[in-house]
Image (cartoon, protein in one colour):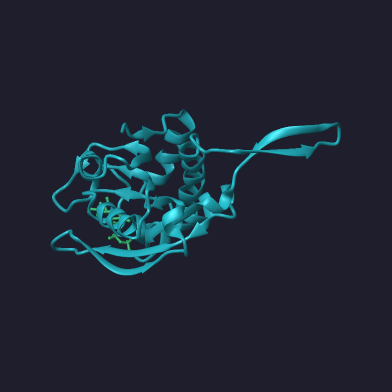
Length: 208
Ligand code: PRP
Ligand code: URA
């Protein structure tokens, strides 16, 4: 499935501020939220609506409405939490699960430390949130965990995606559609995305 990349001058403008190392925590968080909101609109293009009858101040009409409860957002902790406010603004009644995962600093392998998802997750469409898709290890583990709980429809939303991570998801989970603001060049020897934006979790939470 082809990766959906937001190609828009305003998104490039926002990314130019987000990527800049002089941008502080407050602005960084706001931009992650704002871009996540746009990604959420994009990933809902295939949403099925139920026809309902409403009455405008002028007349009755039939119009499509979303059953928001069919959806669950699952941020990968910590950095994925930075995207949650943006997407929950768009679908406020979606359920929220959490997957705790960190990348071992020497092996770069993900370590899972928390998993809590809403009841009936197998019946919902799940939208995973993580600003950075680097090697793809964290994303693959998160997808495997969700599929092991019976989830059938999964989308992956990120701000920056590396070609290496995209290839890994496409190879192991071709059914998972990736949405990103930008596909970057490559990973460096420390498995950071180049040019990237640095450590997303540290920049969102101001931990370094
Ligand atoms: C970052 C990022 C992803 C992961 C991506 O999290 O938010 O979860 O690395 O790397 P990968 O594609 O190579 O697995 P990190 O492990 O730094 O944890 P944090 O969110 O707590 O900062
Ligand atoms: N995690 C990050 O936060 N940034 C990267 O560039 C790679 C992984």
